[in-house]
Length: 211
Image (cartoon, rainbow, N blue to C red; front, top):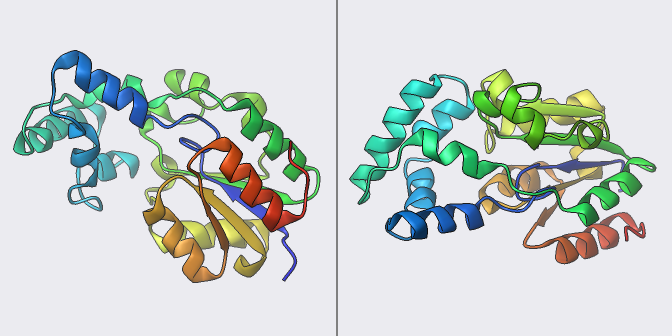
């Protein structure tokens, strides 16, 4: 089937991964390695992070819950200390690829984000650069709809809004767990490891020259 739409994750795809910032923070504070990622991964559907991304708890509750969950894994990390580490830097070559894709196909963005970083919020304004967000026909934010990846419903909402068959979509994400539901719906999926690799796979999937 011909490709009609390309759907993008935001953090770790159009921006650098926050994992590098997490590691730097842990080293500076003398924390156990990967404590932040391990806290995020434990009970990943119902932990503090999941609840905050679905806007079920406020920032104060997230701060406390994340500290308790990380403490159970070896060291207390305040949720509020983790938030500034999320921004990442835009990858210009990925933004260029998005622009070229936009000229030919429908585009969407599905982002698991936090109410504190939502598009339009103070910290969100620096994270979600307006010129980049304008390149999407439709954006779905977990914090605004109370659903987050990998819930299959969030992907269905996107294809319904774009009015495309999942089999005619490419989906890019840096987390395998978020690619699985898209693949099961019939989408072509690309696990983003770095910009060059992702762009190469996207060129192969779309037949476009993207750099």
